[in-house]
Image (cartoon, rainbow, N blue to C red):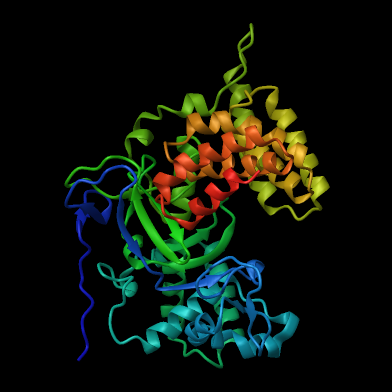
Length: 434
């Protein structure tokens, strides 16, 4: 007898959210830090860059993982994890051996191959589709612009090239729809410092709408997505997450939302723009800076940020680009201006890559205070910055500063990840180790 997975989640219900389409709301009160629900991945994929550090199946990070004896590219905790992952790993194992260095599907293509393979064998709704079946995820295929369509076509070509032996493909139109669905509904799994670990699909979490004043936050426990309240919620409140980085001013946020998710946000913050003045802080001068100069600098900042993403130069040159743009913008913008913070964050990343710890600490210290003011409470952007800095201090034997920083991270993470999360167990150890 097939048992139908129950199609509701305790304390939650699907509803039609005015102006947003379908959404999720609570049917009882939830307190800050309380778990609303957790959702297993419908399917997930570990980033190629993280191979050897994390188990492909359960995303556990540990030393001495066991290697797949065939391809020698995938790593697992033990035989149990390897066996559980085989249905997905076999889609890639022999192909990686056959193609060798030329095996290079995008992470999106890898995820779509897994979805197709899972759909083929799936008999009934699984634990990640209690309220939204995977096929009903929003696709926006009709809104995709030419650039995205080209990327999707390239991904589809990769799918045919690397997966034709093990996966049966639907027709081209259905594939375009599926790639669009994954682009709008895929989740990036990140670690405690917000480094990218992999990508996954969580249909039930995909039902949650966006707000720049989110009521919940999504964190990951292995490959399990957990949704916790970051505001006290009362019966009937909508469950809202942020789809994007909330650092930026209203226009930038909405440009990003339109570009990636095809809608404009009308939350209270987007209507009032109450934080924009703080975010775009300009240097005080006896002769105030002309509005035109400010507007030009905002344009310059946006352009620099866009171009920086696409640059393929050595790290030392990247650092120069950061420093140059900070100097340029610093003539008009305060250090706490979000465009300055964005470039400082990039510079910190480059310093870390170049193992310039002092440089990384210098940038991190400048970023932290404004981050705390700009981001909502219990933000992972803030906790991850405290963690990075705290660990850098500890590495430099500056223990009291390290402990202080790590404790600040812990206060946020106890709400966002839950007190029992293994990140917190590890963090408590870090704090007590001298």
